[in-house]
Amino acid sequence: MDDNLYLSVVVPLYNEEGNVKELHKRIAEACQKIGRSFEIIFVDDGSSDNTVRETGDLTPLKLIKFRKNFGQTAAFDVGIKQARGEIVVTMDGDLQNDPADISLLLDKMNEGYDIVSGWRWQRKDSLLKKIFSRGANLLRKVLVKDNIHDSGCSLKAYKRNCFEDIDLFGEMHRFIPAILQLQGFKVGEVKVSHHPRIHGKTKYNWKRSVKGLTDMIAVWFWRKYANRPLHLFGGGGILFSLLGTVILIWMAILKIFYGASLSEKIWPLVGLFLILVGIQLFVSGLLADIAVRNYYKSRGRMNYSIKEIIEK
Image (cartoon, rainbow, N blue to C red; front, side, top):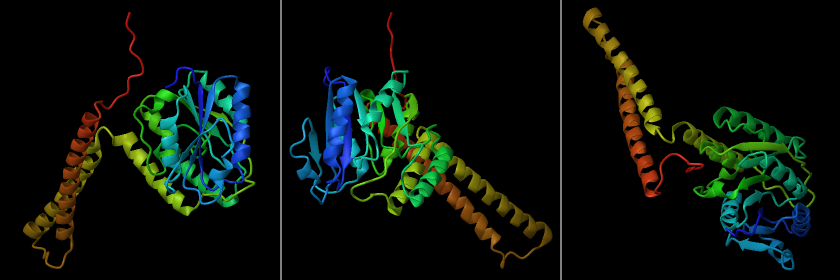
């Protein structure tokens, strides 16, 4: 990291030719008002329009170009890894996030937070997008519990050291605060502006909703069982096996003491099936537990994050 660089602003771009120049201008103006050194990083996510050409005369700017469209999360990941600033700010490239709100994030961060997320409390999106977002936020509060209102808002600020051990996949950029919170980082939130899209088309669709739901479940698993997958799979396996055993014992009692005919009953098969499923789940839990241990050993770290060591 450059010791003299304070702020890195990372923006993924995908077919934003009508927004890119104005966006750069607003970011530069906002950063200049802050009065600290900064860099602007644009990541072109395989745009098929003139987005890259429109960045030709923009300065200061670091432009990273993908060979094809890899998705917003991949763009955030490479931009964050290329960032040199003490603070990394991420935002969308469609001018719906307001660069002037960067100062609000930084002010909140000065209160002792490691991550500050924007909250689009007055959204300027279509009704359908709002409905999907509300549903996703309700589900996220149940599964992820990251204590923020709007995980889908890309306008966020992070201390650079938050990303020392983080790689982003899928649609995980939405859940970065939740992932970092699991490691003990402190997450805050501020209300930010949200503007209607003027140029270009929204990239949000039902496919992204499905991907987001899948990643949400993955974050739930890591939050609850990342360090102890055997508790989930093994516990479920024991439960299924016990239920199957009870059914088989019940069938044996009916056969031995009451002379019941079991030839036309499905329950013996159900009991045997549950026992086999239980054994399979338990074995899967053991294998997952071994995989997690090897994961941490291969990275030279354990399943905890040390914030600070003080020597006196």
